[in-house]
Length: 593
Image (tube, rainbow, N blue to C red; front, side, top):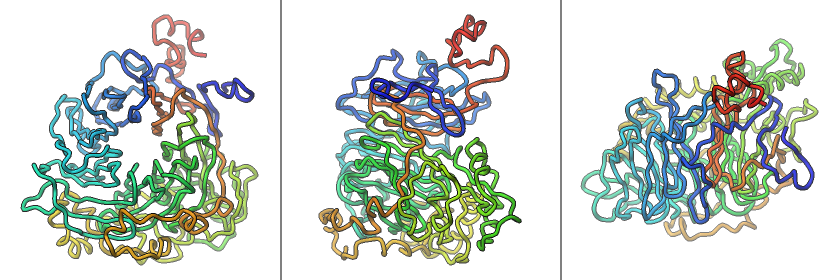
């Protein structure tokens, strides 16, 4: 490992680190940046962001990478851990005047080898639709800034849609657009569709359909980020007022809320099965929130400054099961659920967790997630069964988890999954963290639920042009089953409460909205390493690597254990640590250590 401990060594940039599944290594020749590799002067600029898309071409190298640095936007072929980056040949490069790119998102549904749709949000409030393969700019939304004049903080395509996308602004507003509609030459007029505790949703009032289709006003202050659930039905938003708010996107209902320990929340992500949400922010903490129970189940402390990005690692998250015949507990339904997906074991971590389990604990659940922050540190965390099922006795001597209080109600007491949080499912079914099974159940529930729900919901939203998501839309049977017990009881009947009412932090501390530190388990990071000179702004988990980026504009690739080497033999030894030259291949010992 890189040097650790003591004075000067603590401030050294780490180029490798070890977890239970093995050694992760920085691949210096898989680094992407501006072509001249000169560090960017990041003072006053917007965060560097990275977006990936796979074009599914026949060459086997269909990954594409987009990142912004200052006023510049780059689009490269991403060669991953196998080949060195070629910075001299960007597929597309754009330099903007008077505004800066702040965020971007590819439409994975429509991407082909010949064309890809990329949305780019800007600091002045506009959103641009471009095709970096054809080098075309097709449309500019909010061009005259009549819809919103504030900075775009997050932009994403609506899952399953070829034309709908959602945009968040630092004004605290979100807007739903359709690429096929125009924005109009005058400011939009709105009419109220729905409002609730600290949120309101309006439709655009016009004779003909125009953008935006919907306007969401959420919380107070900037809306810093949002994320769709894996099945696309729910939307998690984090705001500068410190609140996480989770909505049913189609029915525009508030599902649940959570408050940061203090300060604003800056980032949010969903677990691969949609059962947990992790947030990070200005309290230097990562907070794990149960979607089913609408409560905080753990906090993690490892960062020394604001947490800028959180992300789950679906390739290390695992569920393992021992022989069902050895199970002596009373929860027989566990076996039925876990039967569908117990083989999610594509990492050493899964096998270790299975080996460390006892005969009386047949299930070993481990969610892996990561976080990066303004302290230039990368932290990796394991969310284990000790936290997920606190009612059961602890079985492992070392879980990197400090369980401070495990007397709270079990997180798995409600059997509903993310796709059926309010439906009349059989109550005894506990949660399965099996990712393959979760995907199967999600797919199977879409058509059955939608058949009965479209008829009751389509009339209200008929003017919103949501027809291209008809298979996923208008699920009306889900109401606020889980939300009201976790929201302030104050009335929100008046619209001005949406933007003017402040929640007193002192009144939320110690409530289900914001438990005290001693009332929930405190996670300790598996690793916490300084990996950059400037604040970190990107963390993405790919199958064979981890991608990070810092504000200087360097996009770094970290090879996973066992993924750096190619085929056995002299020519396959750590190609990326050599200079990928003929001399290095002939003398691998010179560049491969």
